[in-house]
Length: 176
Length: 428
Image 1 (cartoon, each protein chain N blue to C red):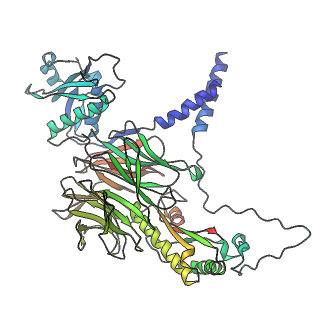
Image 2 (image 1 turned 120 degrees about the vertical axis):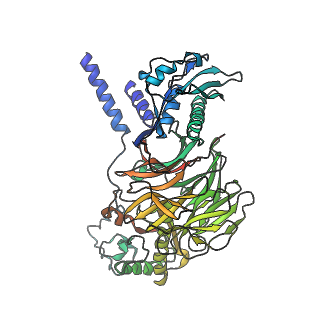
Image 3 (image 1 turned 180 degrees about the vertical axis):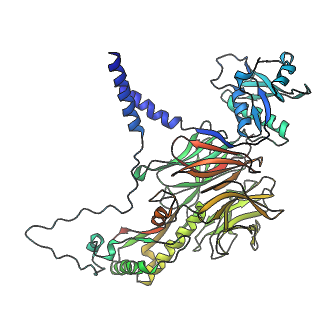
């Protein structure tokens, strides 16, 4: 009886502790993929041309640049590197083709440097992305820059493997 | 049913008891030996769980300047001056002895009656009564510690003060930010505002009654000012771009802040009564983190106009900015000592950030902490210690370092990622 009671207590404690514990799995870095549309078995739908940047289906087409929506930066820098320019050109083309499209450029920094300075640095990055989107044909009213500085990291270890993932601008479509 | 009740209690406990632990990492070589004898409880009703003397001794210990004797090593526990056997305390190598008792106060609270003696000369150094309200016995004990500290070091104590900090708990979608206010020893943390979106940059009003802070609760950054006691709050600034880095002027009439409405972050000064806002800096660089000199005449801020962040100063009335810090790869987030002579900064070199002091007179930088990601320095109102944020593994903890760098203490919240400490002014 005593043992049973003890067991029950131990079990209760274990349950309680596990219920209190926070989930420690690392944050997912990629945006959750949208559910894949199952083509009708009878009728075959033509796959979108990945280079047709006016086709909204390309947002979920891994072959298309429109599916890439995160731009990464060097430490304490806000220049958009050459490798990301084609991605931004694709989004600018989409925004030029869709009058309803609107994006928030969520801008981030890694943890190095002070928090308020990093708000400024994040905004600089967001503005650099906004400038390239404008140059590609997006209109100013379609874009908002929100800098979170270092407050919303996707990775929390203090080394470069993590830091590069945090120095980013996410192109978030609020309307397509 | 009983199981779930227990579960509830345990979970509640993990939040309510999320207190700060204090541990001296590095002490001073010459600590003053003092006996803080347990105070007699002469009030009606049961004595508190933690006695007044325990609170006083813990305060003195964590200053790093005192070595309070453990109660178990005391041979007797005198309550009145006549009962002190000075010869015995001398043999125990104690330099000072503090005795006292707690009475009911005629106006409803408590009177803490205490006396401090020099064991060698038998001179009475202090004999005072501290009166506190019914719920403020701990606060009264901190005031006793302040008086003892000032008597024996010549510097006013800063124990009867509070700290504000931001704590982040949870991961991903369950991440929650809280702005917390606690006593300076970490006791009694109270969440003044909570949000699923980031909170940062708390700053105390000079009378300690209000906090200005930045909240992303509406999507973009906005500055709020909140009464600590009532929770009543007002949104001060929520324009396009950054609304950040609020800092009350020493007279409480103005708020310095950072706005990027012109296209890049600039420092502005807002008169709180009228809302009238004027631009203080004008440069394509990032200008942010304004803080006032104690006389209110100068505003120090961070700018990367020379390439990397450094501290600059500008007259609060306006004018051109001048560079202040001239050593170190980069320096940011200034906190000015109460005498106006020293600037505490987060000093960056490579990937490492340490707390350093730039001495305005000698024009020298002195690094105080080992790093590696130390930031957000905040001077104690007596200038003796600097509170700052540091990292342990992947979580943030608070630490404090003495202004001379000799004493360091770690303040750990039992759960969550703690950052952005702000030491309150002296609360009267």
